Image 1 (cartoon, rainbow, N blue to C red):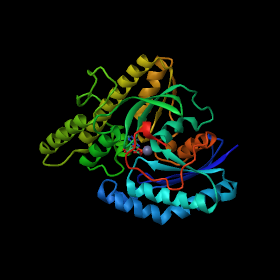
Image 2 (cartoon, protein in one colour):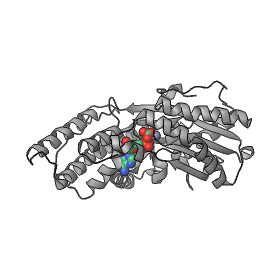
Image 3 (cartoon, rainbow, N blue to C red):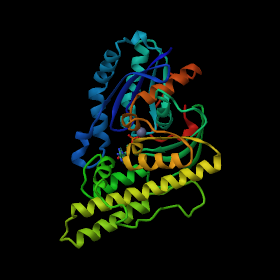
Image 4 (cartoon, rainbow, N blue to C red):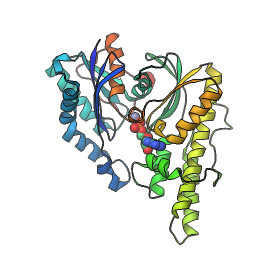
Length: 342
Ligand code: KG4
Ligand code: ZN
């Protein structure tokens, strides 16, 4: 029954968690920086890493306390080494290296996206392999065939912006505040989904790749038009309609590509993970889709969709079992494809 401490600091959330046996969350903490970045309407990398330095000791200590354990009880320490913002990653990696060395515990270097894919296994009833993994996060939008956590094959990915980036940029353009995705989700609730006919990018393209940059631009043009016709101000009702119509376009594309990926691979199980998997409309539509197609669908609870350290500990648990211990001089990488992961 290995007990693993996970540490995640790849972007603007600093998280620590203790997971038993790769599936049971004993304690989990996430220190959000929303109030730090909100005045700027997006993540300011330098502020993110400075804030991580300020809190990393405290968050790890609190997590150990909440779990009622000491460093001696731990069997290993997992840390995200990439991809992400390099300054942010370095804080977690430097801390984890020192902590592992001080307490003479093995260190495991975890790929952030593998962490998201593993988040679907942190449940009472973890999804069985193989499954289709739809990763919809701030940095990534991709489809994978997950045969096991050790064998993950990319099927398709976005050619430009991620769906999360599109949400964040659309939110910023409409003055909806930060973090943007959640605000668009909220504003869309009272909007009309059919009010605007936005493009569904890459649907005519036969492959599994995606694209969201054109859709983002189409929304920005419509926002400008709506402002121009209303004395330079975006009417809140129109804004809600724009959000609902934009969100529907993203969801349509994600469902269509998912359906295509399932047909191609013959998979009958799928997990939807990453920050955007917290989106209420996406959860609702994907649930309907799964029911219609007798598909086993899992998406994590909201707190495990967005960045967290339990998913990092879950991957580290498997790496420890396989003896894939990180070298003492392990480094952080801002960009590292899944096939190059540790
Ligand atoms: O996975 P995540 O926490 O961080 C990355 O690894 O990137 O994902 C963050 C992304 C952001 O783009 C955020 O706006 C989006 O997830 N997000 C949402 C919602 N909650 C978070 N997007 C749409 N609807 C939501 N409810
Ligand atoms: Zn993430």
